[in-house]
Amino acid sequence: MELMGSTLTATYSRPKSSHFLPAISTMAASYRSHQPLVALAQGSGMPWRTSGYYKSGNGGVSGLAASGLARSKTMFYPSNRAALTSRYTPDDWHKSNQCNYRESESSRNSAERLRRDTIRMIQDKDQLTRHTQESTSKNIGERITDISFWRSELNHEIENMVAEIGALSEVKRRLERALAETEGPLQVSQECLYHREKRMSIDLVHDDVEKDLLKEVEVIKSCQERMRRHLDRAIAQLAANRGAQHELEKDASDKVSAFRIDDRCHQLRNKSDGISYHRGVERNDPSLSLPETWCRFTDSNILHSQSERATSHKLRDEIEILLNATSTQMWNQFNTVNVAFTNRLSETADAKNSLQTHLAKTLQEIFQTEMLIESLRKAIRDKENPLKVAQTRLEERARRPNMELCRDNPHHRLVGEVREIEDTIQKLRDRLAEAESALQMLVKTKVTLEHDLSVKANSLFLDQEKCMGMRRTFPSTPRLVGYT
Image 1: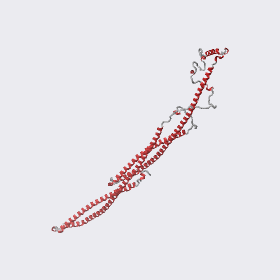
Image 2 (image 1 turned 45 degrees about the horizontal axis):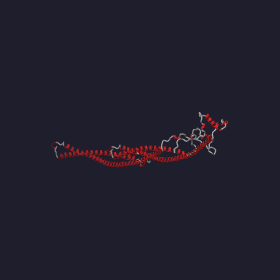
Image 3 (image 1 turned 135 degrees about the vertical axis):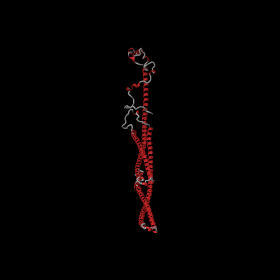
Image 4 (image 1 turned 120 degrees about the horizontal axis):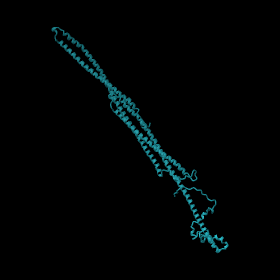
């Protein structure tokens, strides 16, 4: 049963007497008959009056007096006629009494019926009010239970979200540390490339070490780019997580306020302090939602938070996989470069050793060639005196007189000796020229070998001391995954 409107305020007080009967003077109006009196006395305005009482010319008091006087002339003495003009007949008297009895009985029946109906209505309304109040209290209690349930769900989700934000923040810090750690290896690789540009001459080659170093730079930059993308995603996800947490905390705060208000309302009783009238408050509807939308709002907040947590957890897994993958990838490339460096250093060292061996042999050959040249020069010098002797003999014998100037055997022998010595000197000079040319070639080779040795020594210094010395500072795996 729905009650419309506001309750009327009134103060009820029971009479002090034991009988709940009003005074006659105050209830005079209640004696009016509730039935039309025309049906009781036809032709007369009053049921207990004679019809002759109302018969007059103008229907006034003079007509009433005339009819009474006419009746009195036949029944009483003439001396009492004036006094008896206003009297009624016994029938009128009995009729009046009977009419009063009926009217009294009707009024009493009506009042009794009204009293019984009123008492029953009061009892029904009291019971209805108690039932309505109990139902309202029960509804408020159920509402408190619902608020407590959703508040616990919100608090549980807030705790999970706070834990997820902490975990994602820690992974984000690890990612930032890992990203910062990659700057060192990248700088080392670039420094190695820079130092290897100082190689000289033939050693300035595009070898496997340089290829692997360039690939290492690409690998590190690729890892850094992927780390930066995941770092941006982590920052955005943290913002989304904090937004979901804010919505949950706001909803939970509203639930706490609503719980406090409803709990105070649930504890209010009819004799509680602080209750008062608030006229028209039932016409105001401050609520903007229905129970369905209220539940759906909190449920959507929780579902949104759970969705963000799932996305955050997935992102954390991806970051973990990324950190392990980038660490492994950089370490593999680092080892590949180191192996290439080791092989290149071995090759360079072998080449340097070979050059040193050839240089030693060349120096030995230069020494021997120089000794040969010196021997040839001495041999040429040794042929000068015999040539002079032979030419002097020919010159002296050419001054023989007349027929003594004969081409005898000594003459032919001296001529042959001069030609033989001159031919020997020419051959020695040719061989000396060849020896000097060979010596120049040996010296040139020596210079080339010494230059190559300096080049190889420079390359070994750059690769072994500069590059490999820096590469010893490559960060460890825990640092590359951001733990330290």
